[in-house]
Image (cartoon, rainbow, N blue to C red; front, side):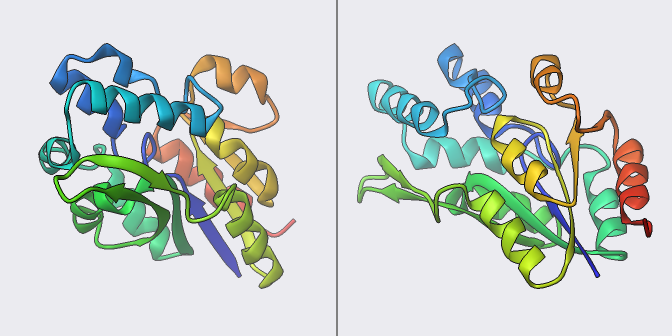
Length: 202
């Protein structure tokens, strides 16, 4: 039996922090896991920027409410759920994800939590666990699932490497070049075909 593990941002939905950067005009917030492999360093920088600009959770959620899945994402996810068990493994936060999960039909999502102050300040972030994407794939393998994983960034590489089959979804050129053993897909049609091939008996 197969289980498909998908990243969320950059795969099924736009990058939330990129959207927020564009809406606020704060260029520093455009940095994502495609640019920075150290997730803690990235998040500490984001929290500092939010504090300096006096931006809170409500400001970010206003942007998210106007976002939607990437074109074709709903159809792709529906097709995959008809063939495989599907779990989304993301480094986003539950406070960000709900409006977009609703639009995607409430798929299973494993992600993290934000520490929000009474005034809405984003005080800190709490990882569900360190390296949770790789740990989840490893656990699924221990449950005798054949695992297929797809993602787009540095923070997906451990998950892709742990899976029986790992696939890049329109990654930046510098990330794909560093990990040339993962096939690269540039559309949902390519991704679906690659997943189906990976699920075929050896």
